[in-house]
Image (cartoon, rainbow, N blue to C red; front, side, top):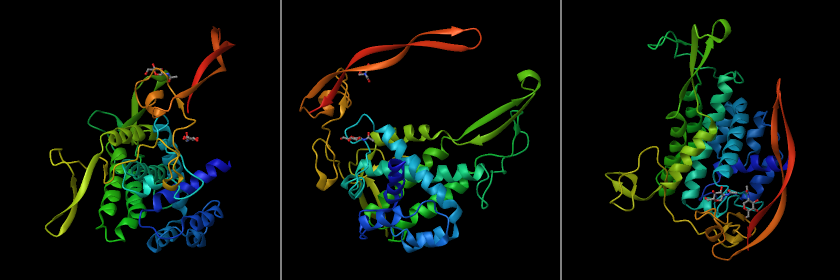
Amino acid sequence: SNHSYFLQKICLSALLLTATSTSSPVRYLAKLSSVGSISEEETCEKLKGLIQRQVQICKRNVEVMDSVRRGAQLAIDECQYQFRNRRWNCSTLDTLPVFGKVVTQGTREAAFVYAISSAGVAFAVTRACSSGELEKCGCDRSVHGVSPEGFQWSGCSDNIAYGVAFSQTFVDVRERSKGSSSSRALMNLHNNEAGRKAILNNMRVECKCHGVSGSCEVKTCWKAMPPFRKVGNVLKEKFDGATEVEQRKIGSTKVLVPKNSQFKPHTDEDLVYLDSSPDFCEHDMKNGVLGTTGRHCNKTSKAIDGCELMCCGRGFHTEEVEVVDRCSCKFHWCCYVKCKQCRKVVEMHTCR
Ligand SMILES: *[C@@H]1O[C@H](CO)[C@@H](O)[C@H](O)[C@H]1NC(C)=O
Ligand SMILES: *[C@@H]1O[C@H](CO)[C@@H](O)[C@H](O)[C@H]1NC(C)=O
C-alpha cells in the first residue's frame, strides 16, 4: 500500500538523515520513491541520502539491501506500537525531516529511533541469512554437536554475528565517517550499539521434539533471536530509563558521561541522550511536532495515556461509538467456535 511504501522510504531516511545532514531531505525522498525493490547496482547510486561509503557498501551487498528495508520497516512499526499511547507516537510526517526535529536533535526519542533502527537492520539481515535468502551468509553452524544438557544442536542457529556486523558496517559508517568525535555522533553510535545489544543479550534456545507420537526421544535445538516485539519492549524500557549525557575529554579521547555525576554510568545496553525533549503538546510544524489534538485518551488512567496528561490540560470531547464484538461464544464438538455478534456502545474520548 501507499502508506507502507511511504514508511519504507522514511525508514531509510530515519536511519540516514542526521542532524548534520545538509542534503535536501525532500530531494532525497523523491529519489527514493523511484526505487521499488533494490535490485541493481545503479540503484545504490540513486539513493541520494547515502553517503559515498554507504553507496560502496550497498553495491557490494545489493542482495542484502532488501533486508535493510525490511529491517527499517520493522523498526518503524515497532516504534509506533511502543509509543502508541504517548504524546509522541512515532508518527511520520509528509514533510521533512520525517520525524521532525525530535530526531534531528539529540533527544531521548532520537535515541530510541536510532537504537530500534540499527536493531531492525541486524534482525532482518540475520533472518534473511537463516532462511537461506542470501548467498553471503547462512545459518550459524558453529553451534553443533550434542549439548551438555543432552540435546542435539540442529546446526542451524540464527547468524546474529553476521546481522550485527552488517548493521555496524552499514548503519554506523555514517557517524564514523564524520570522525565520530562530535557528541551527536558519539550518541548515535552508542544508541545504535545498544539497539543491537537488545537482540544479542536476549538470544534464546528453541527446540523441537522428535519421536513417536510427540514424545521427546530426540530433541534438536538452535539459538534463535527473540521476537522483534521483545526487542522493542527492552528498548522501550531503556527509553524510560535513558541517561542524559554530555561530552568529556579523557586523555585524547572524547567520551559521553552522565550529566549528573551522581548517576551511575550507563552501560552498553542503555540509551543515552543529549537534549531534553519538547512536551509534544501543541501543533508545531516548524519543529515537526504534531501535537495531541485529536488523540484518543483514557479517561480513567492517571498515566500518560490518560486524558489529563495526553491532552495537556486542554480537556477532551466524549463521543459514544458503537463497537461490534464477538460474544457468547460456544465451543462445538468438534472443532469450531461459534459466536454471536454483540453491539455495544462505548465512550470514546478525544483531546481538544
Ligand atoms: C499519531 O498522532 C497523530 C495526532 O497527533 C495522528 O494524526 C497519527 O495518526 C498518530 N500516528 C500513529 C502512528 O498512531
Ligand atoms: C484505561 O485505564 C485504566 C486504568 O489504567 C485501565 O484499567 C483500562 O483498561 C484502560 N482502558 C483502555 C480502553 O485502555
